[in-house]
Length: 605
Image: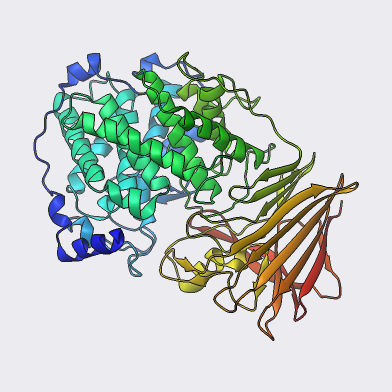
């Protein structure tokens, strides 16, 4: 009902009337007042920082790219946008959005425009953190470049117009990154009164936009978008109490943020979106929330800290300890909003370590990780100090959302079999296998959300996972954009330990769009102490004549797969470790018209 009303207001023009397109004057604190009395960030300014200085060549290389006008897309690919970039052109397609068109009229799924995330990426201003970090570690000053880029964006993006106002989460990310840079360059002579007023006026009206549109994320979306937006409102009200509506932002933002944390994070720490990367987004948001609440002497409800701790534990248990990677499971759009180190995008250690320090007062890993240095490891006396998390071995279960792990010294087996609180994914009974740090049986990832239909169907469908397909049918039926119909139903999922093995058994009711009562039952038997797995799939009530396909995506020359009575069909699949990039991978299929497939997986040394 909300979406229908919202769409009517958008098409009729009623929605646009709520969002002005002119930056009207607003009461902003004077620059010197803010410098002396304004509430700070994790740090008050660059001189107050106590981060261990480390002149890494990779950081210098990034800075050289940025000063030339290059932009890093999705933590992987540099693109030469130039210093005169207009902020509204998609570098992948060359499509130029109208910067003067009201945001309510922008189509973010245009085939001609391509994936709008390629436009949003630079406007997130996550790269400002790289500039601040470079200046701190190398004792240099690029305040003019950083502040100049913010002012350039304000000039070229009229209020509430163009693609960069289309998504309130993008706006919230941008504001938080601007605030990071403003506090870092707080004492800089480059930050003049006029510039400060211009930036803060823009921030005020962008915050006003988020506040007016907040129910879209809170009612129609309810995922990491809602957490980002409500947190930004709370922090704006907390940091700028002298601004109009600050108390409203703070009070509502805090209450809504707590509601979203409570709703979206299960009691076992699993996350509503069934996505490792989106869960990391929430880890960073909770880190910001806790650190800045501590800074200002505020406190959230106890369950926020409990769920933050359980979230941290869930991702830590799923992590490969040698490189910090997790299974590339669930939607992965390349989001890493607040990069504070040179670690690879797939390495979750910096973000988990930062939150762990806030909750326990201790580092999570032995090695130096810079994120925690910026955030701090302080646990104030007014909130609980948690015990350090520890890696669990053997059988590890997260039943609320349906994640099952078998961890031994050299192997990690990750199985997905559970309920969906939201739309769901085409990957029930997927098996991910890690051996000595290598992801030898892997998930295909996401690649891009707006590309050709065949590619979208591959990555979002069942074909990119290590599970069962019936014919060419996915486990669900494709709808528009992110919508899938007929989500699978969990019937059972158990784990047990026997004398020489660990055993998982799970059954789901899937493929509902092609027949009633279709059940897929998978048994994974992991032999103790050796790299050997047996996987048996049994399919009940499948339509007559449909081929049953057991799919495997291979990332090791030492992997041997054998199926009883079936030939291995070797083909090529795709894998996307970073958004917007895909690479070929080996795919093995076992096909049969029978209702049972048993495969033995062995790693040959």
